[in-house]
Length: 259
Ligand SMILES: C[S@@+](CC[C@H](N)C(=O)[O-])C[C@H]1O[C@@H](n2cnc3c(N)ncnc32)[C@H](O)[C@@H]1O
Image (cartoon, rainbow, N blue to C red; front, side, top):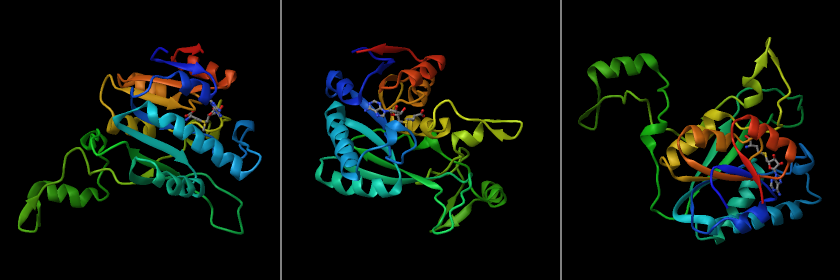
């Protein structure tokens, strides 16, 4: 199997071919069983979790002992996955909440859902985390401008803000991709129904890998992860089973192959 391409393949066939102990970073954006498309529809919840645990168990041996893993899902599924993964020898690091901010809903019987979850794991305590490369802006511009001049006295020491911003926290306020691309103020139907925002994938890759590392893009969809890995000079390899989506991937400048 060659790097720097996405394979048109089912996840299990693909993982069977991928060499063990080679991956530095996994970004997996699987079906959530929310009936958004045929590929997102499972007969029962039990079928869904059997599928999910099966691909996770097929993926883990591909990781180096220093690898990091990001798993997308909704909060309900993530809670079950998190509970189950306590039986695996991986280290839980963060429950990241993606707060989507935008969008609306006609829901009247419960709170409007505006979040997705990203479970962040590492294979061990020895892993890459480039915290300085993913700093975010401070909330209060005036207070920070003042602190930059005089500093703030904290426990006897003078603290000055970092010019790159503050350390990134585990609630990510990022506009969803379909609200970013508007024509004359109107949302246009995206080519793929669940494209992840570039900004979010960029943050994960910068934080949890270095140049020339190998990023595993499982369930590539429109190929966002592979495209950004390429831009950031990382190697990548991924799989997507839908031929129509693979056309979007190649239009985005990422090569594909068949198993
Ligand atoms: C949530 S989407 C990924 C979207 C992607 N992150 C993006 O930004 O475009 C999940 C993708 O997994 C693919 N998929 C679903 N089941 C699969 C399987 N068994 N093997 C390979 N791909 C699968 C679907 O076709 C879909 O494009």
